[in-house]
Image (cartoon, rainbow, N blue to C red; front, side, top):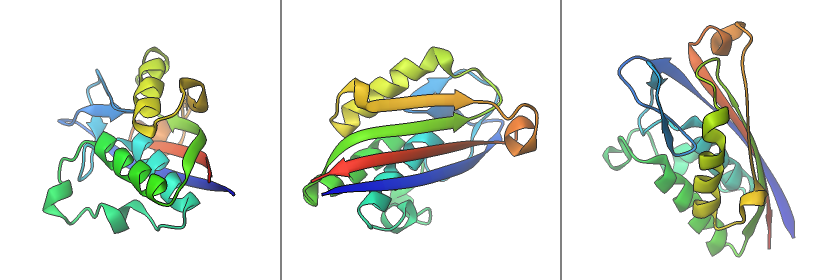
Length: 157
Protein backbone atom coordinates (compact mmCIF):
# COMPACT_ATOMS: atom_id res chain seq x y z
CA UNK A 1 0.00 0.00 0.00
CA UNK A 2 1.31 3.43 -0.92
CA UNK A 3 -0.03 6.76 0.32
CA UNK A 4 0.70 10.37 -0.63
CA UNK A 5 0.71 13.38 1.69
CA UNK A 6 0.96 17.06 0.83
CA UNK A 7 1.29 20.05 3.14
CA UNK A 8 2.40 23.64 3.35
CA UNK A 9 3.58 25.80 6.23
CA UNK A 10 3.84 29.59 6.48
CA UNK A 11 5.69 31.66 9.06
CA UNK A 12 6.16 35.41 9.24
CA UNK A 13 9.72 36.74 9.19
CA UNK A 14 10.69 39.00 12.07
CA UNK A 15 13.80 40.55 13.56
CA UNK A 16 15.18 38.99 16.72
CA UNK A 17 14.56 35.38 15.68
CA UNK A 18 16.95 32.81 14.21
CA UNK A 19 16.28 31.67 10.65
CA UNK A 20 16.18 27.88 10.80
CA UNK A 21 15.14 25.89 7.75
CA UNK A 22 15.67 22.18 7.24
CA UNK A 23 17.39 22.06 10.61
CA UNK A 24 20.05 24.51 9.41
CA UNK A 25 20.62 27.85 11.13
CA UNK A 26 21.07 30.40 8.34
CA UNK A 27 22.67 33.79 8.81
CA UNK A 28 20.05 36.48 8.18
CA UNK A 29 18.70 39.62 9.84
CA UNK A 30 15.23 38.04 10.21
CA UNK A 31 13.98 34.66 11.34
CA UNK A 32 10.71 32.77 11.31
CA UNK A 33 8.30 33.63 14.08
CA UNK A 34 6.40 30.79 15.73
CA UNK A 35 5.77 28.80 18.90
CA UNK A 36 8.54 26.28 18.18
CA UNK A 37 11.75 27.15 16.34
CA UNK A 38 9.38 27.81 13.40
CA UNK A 39 11.23 25.69 10.82
CA UNK A 40 8.64 25.97 8.04
CA UNK A 41 10.33 23.33 5.86
CA UNK A 42 10.37 20.65 8.55
CA UNK A 43 6.81 21.54 9.55
CA UNK A 44 5.59 21.07 5.97
CA UNK A 45 7.36 17.70 5.67
CA UNK A 46 6.11 16.51 9.07
CA UNK A 47 2.54 17.52 8.27
CA UNK A 48 2.73 15.84 4.85
CA UNK A 49 3.69 12.59 6.62
CA UNK A 50 0.73 12.99 8.98
CA UNK A 51 -1.52 13.72 6.01
CA UNK A 52 -0.40 10.62 4.12
CA UNK A 53 -1.46 8.55 7.12
CA UNK A 54 -4.68 10.48 7.84
CA UNK A 55 -3.39 11.40 11.30
CA UNK A 56 -4.51 15.04 11.28
CA UNK A 57 -2.30 18.10 11.38
CA UNK A 58 0.70 19.23 13.42
CA UNK A 59 -1.49 21.21 15.80
CA UNK A 60 -3.22 18.01 16.89
CA UNK A 61 0.06 16.35 17.88
CA UNK A 62 2.26 19.38 18.72
CA UNK A 63 -0.14 22.14 19.83
CA UNK A 64 1.10 25.72 19.83
CA UNK A 65 -0.67 26.18 23.15
CA UNK A 66 1.43 23.59 24.98
CA UNK A 67 4.33 24.69 27.15
CA UNK A 68 6.26 21.53 26.21
CA UNK A 69 6.35 22.57 22.52
CA UNK A 70 7.43 26.16 23.14
CA UNK A 71 10.78 26.75 21.42
CA UNK A 72 10.86 23.08 20.37
CA UNK A 73 13.47 21.97 17.83
CA UNK A 74 11.50 21.06 14.71
CA UNK A 75 13.85 18.14 14.08
CA UNK A 76 12.12 16.57 17.12
CA UNK A 77 8.71 17.33 15.61
CA UNK A 78 9.73 15.61 12.36
CA UNK A 79 11.19 12.69 14.33
CA UNK A 80 7.90 12.33 16.20
CA UNK A 81 5.97 12.14 12.94
CA UNK A 82 8.43 9.58 11.55
CA UNK A 83 7.86 7.48 14.67
CA UNK A 84 4.08 7.66 14.14
CA UNK A 85 4.63 6.56 10.53
CA UNK A 86 6.75 3.59 11.64
CA UNK A 87 4.17 2.61 14.29
CA UNK A 88 1.61 2.30 11.47
CA UNK A 89 4.02 0.05 9.55
CA UNK A 90 5.04 2.55 6.87
CA UNK A 91 8.39 3.83 5.64
CA UNK A 92 9.21 6.90 3.61
CA UNK A 93 9.72 6.41 -0.12
CA UNK A 94 10.53 10.02 -1.03
CA UNK A 95 10.05 13.69 -0.18
CA UNK A 96 9.76 16.58 -2.61
CA UNK A 97 9.81 20.02 -1.01
CA UNK A 98 10.16 23.69 -1.92
CA UNK A 99 11.11 26.69 0.20
CA UNK A 100 9.67 30.02 -0.94
CA UNK A 101 11.78 32.85 0.48
CA UNK A 102 13.08 36.06 -1.07
CA UNK A 103 16.33 36.30 0.91
CA UNK A 104 18.79 34.87 1.75
CA UNK A 105 19.83 32.43 -0.97
CA UNK A 106 19.11 28.83 0.00
CA UNK A 107 21.48 27.09 -2.46
CA UNK A 108 24.48 27.03 -0.07
CA UNK A 109 22.35 25.30 2.59
CA UNK A 110 20.26 22.78 0.65
CA UNK A 111 22.71 19.87 0.85
CA UNK A 112 22.89 20.10 4.65
CA UNK A 113 19.08 20.37 4.84
CA UNK A 114 18.75 17.22 2.75
CA UNK A 115 21.24 15.39 4.98
CA UNK A 116 19.39 16.46 8.15
CA UNK A 117 16.02 15.37 6.75
CA UNK A 118 17.31 12.03 5.41
CA UNK A 119 18.90 11.26 8.77
CA UNK A 120 15.74 11.92 10.79
CA UNK A 121 13.48 10.21 8.23
CA UNK A 122 15.78 7.17 8.08
CA UNK A 123 15.99 7.23 4.29
CA UNK A 124 18.66 7.60 1.64
CA UNK A 125 19.78 11.09 0.69
CA UNK A 126 18.57 10.60 -2.89
CA UNK A 127 15.02 10.20 -1.51
CA UNK A 128 14.98 13.81 -0.26
CA UNK A 129 14.49 16.74 -2.62
CA UNK A 130 14.72 20.30 -1.33
CA UNK A 131 14.33 23.16 -3.77
CA UNK A 132 14.04 26.91 -3.29
CA UNK A 133 12.47 29.79 -5.15
CA UNK A 134 11.87 33.49 -4.62
CA UNK A 135 8.75 35.62 -4.70
CA UNK A 136 10.26 37.92 -7.36
CA UNK A 137 9.35 40.88 -5.11
CA UNK A 138 5.63 39.95 -5.26
CA UNK A 139 3.34 38.99 -2.37
CA UNK A 140 4.35 38.30 1.23
CA UNK A 141 7.32 36.17 0.14
CA UNK A 142 8.61 38.75 -2.33
CA UNK A 143 8.16 41.57 0.19
CA UNK A 144 10.23 39.57 2.70
CA UNK A 145 7.32 39.33 5.14
CA UNK A 146 7.32 35.55 5.42
CA UNK A 147 8.43 32.14 4.25
CA UNK A 148 6.28 29.42 2.71
CA UNK A 149 7.34 25.78 2.50
CA UNK A 150 5.55 23.08 0.54
CA UNK A 151 6.15 19.33 0.80
CA UNK A 152 4.84 16.13 -0.73
CA UNK A 153 5.72 12.69 0.58
CA UNK A 154 5.18 9.15 -0.57
CA UNK A 155 5.01 6.45 2.10
CA UNK A 156 4.74 2.71 1.64
CA UNK A 157 3.74 -0.25 3.79
